[in-house]
Amino acid sequence: MSQSTAYPGRPRTPAPGATAPELVIARLRRHARRLIWPALALIAASGATGYFSGNLPGPLEDWMLWVAAALVILLLVVVPYLRWLSHTYTVTTRRVIERAGLVNRRRTDIPHARGYTISERRGPVQRMWGSGTLILANGVDEPLRLLDIPSVRLVHETLADQVEVSQILAHRDSHSIPIVGSDD
Image (cartoon, rainbow, N blue to C red; front, side):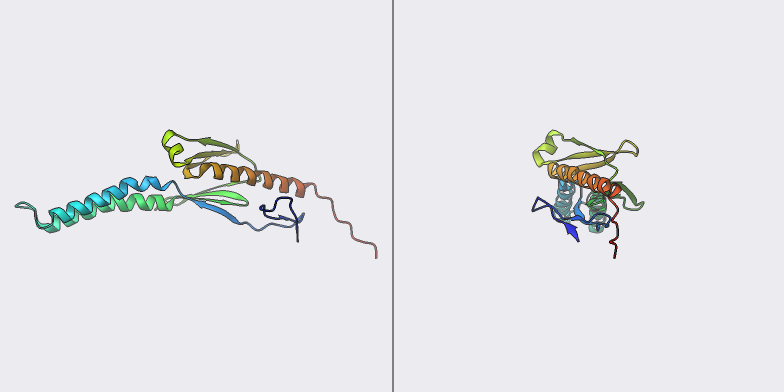
């Protein structure tokens, strides 16, 4: 049972007093341009290994080249990719969740119903790629920074809408009129 809305693209609001399910709106990572340098390192290491394999001078052997290439690929390609992959931001209908860390996992939540201010920062390179950093501050907890996220304007508008809807629903539920049973 839900109430209709005047906006056709907006989700239906739950009935007063009913709990709404938590739905995932978006899952984000930092902009993928951070992987340009690891990709170039992979290409350079592969090219150098292919070129020097079998052509090494005197005391060096091919296995030494392969070990060095594996170390370069591990440190300059695999580790940065795993760090990028392990840092996610999830926007749901109730909160924003940040998860980070390869070994030591860290999780930070900020609920929409408490309300927060949204600050947007964009450097020249970020403006070219359409990305930016959003800072969510509620005045009590430490601000949550969504670093270098793609489509920053769209995410900003979505977060502002979610805060507004959550606060409206919280206000409505706190001031709801009790339903009086019928006299039969």
